[in-house]
Length: 574
Image (cartoon, rainbow, N blue to C red; front, side, top):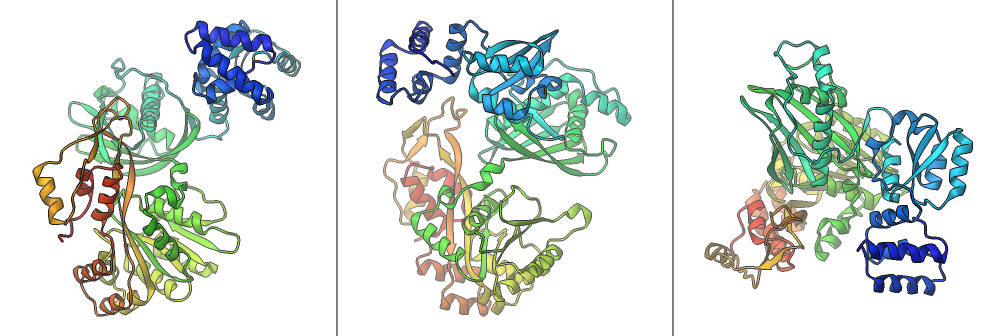
């Protein structure tokens, strides 16, 4: 955005006032701030930073001021054949993007329409006349990033807002050949629909997309904050073409429709790259598609962002900085275990430590960490990969999951012989993870010696901050809390609003249970004590249960007691 010169600044302010975007007082306050800072900041930047108006309103006013068109630029407006007409360094330096060429006129989106010098440079480089349109810096940057990836990465934008598309007669029979499937999948309406579903799911912070055929209808559901919600019902006859389109994006075999297939692809949604992991499985009514949405940035959280209480954070950090031993994170699928492990690796990552991972699927690239993916489709096994990794002289080893006897034995052995080993198990609470290792064939005294801590966790929906209200608990809930020796005064919930799609919830936070074996508990582990007995000992030694950690977050106004009880095991009665 450009507003160089006092005359232009006044004109920009007057235009924004005339458009009803801001008030005259807001213009005066922004100009005063600009004078105080020695005119080092543009008026438009100050207005945006102060929250007086949006970047698009500034760009629209600038466009009107300099008598050029205003455009909401996106990747779909950009002609890929013309994109490389200017050097990428030039585009990034001057924050501009070429859109298309008509005859000898090149249309270029800029965020500073006053910069005539850049226009002259473009004409000299390309030999074309230049038509300027004004757009926001964020829209231009997002479009540049959409074209920064190599092949097999698709640019996705908010392509359509409509919920229904005209029915298409794409599939005539189940005996079509691959050519017909590929042709149907390439239809613009199919491409548009699939792109819309991908972008809309990311916009709604969904973790999964389910495309589910029935005999007479096709259903699309999103999993948002752990709960499935139906989004739309596209025409049933689009089903095969939609599945084929997803196969094309994931580089899967179009002709294979009788056996399950797995794959993945990456897209740009807005300004961020997002990975979609594809699972296609034949059913009695046709192929069901499940798409897991993986935002690499979401896996790069630090420990402070994971919802730990101060006590749990201090104790968990002590485990991570132990010289050796086995640390487990337990919980059901979808409870954020891998996110916690990646945050832990970020905590440990340094030039002095050799960190190696063994992962089913590498969710995000960690700079400075040696990551190894297990290709189970090609016959690979976690245990075999782990055995090779242990020959790489690691200091820290992360194993995505312990689920078989050999992996369990290798992990425990590594923890006993000098490595810090981090991994996950599927158990309902922290003490139960001990029994899981023993059930997998590890001798109980080895578990006792190797294990230094188990973190159990669940993800609980956060109360929408936009529609919080106090309410009265039901008699049943008050009785349940009383049996635990707990009371809640003035609990909070979300009333439901447009921002949270009338659910009362927005986002999720983790609740934790940290099991730290002392000498008495280690003796009991060696004696093969059951998880119930281990749990009683741990609670007697001040282990805070999942439900009590959740109640702390209820009192803080972050979550509801109903949601805490929904995701936790049977509460411990006082």
